[in-house]
Length: 75
Image 1: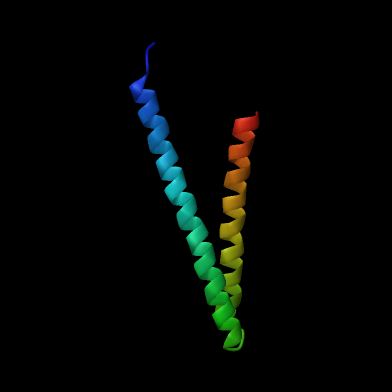
Image 2: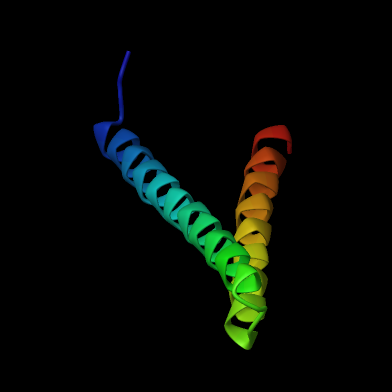
């Protein structure tokens, strides 16, 4: 049995980068949602609307990445 260590290393590296990236994007979504809720408590400024929009964009990007991963596994 032969193991292609270079390919295994590439898979590990890509998996690590994508995982850290998705966690970072999801964290930005949480921070944006938190900022939006605190801004709406202060009177609902434009910053709150932008923070909420950014949070939704981060969540949508995470959902798209998960959907693409499922597509790759199934297809």
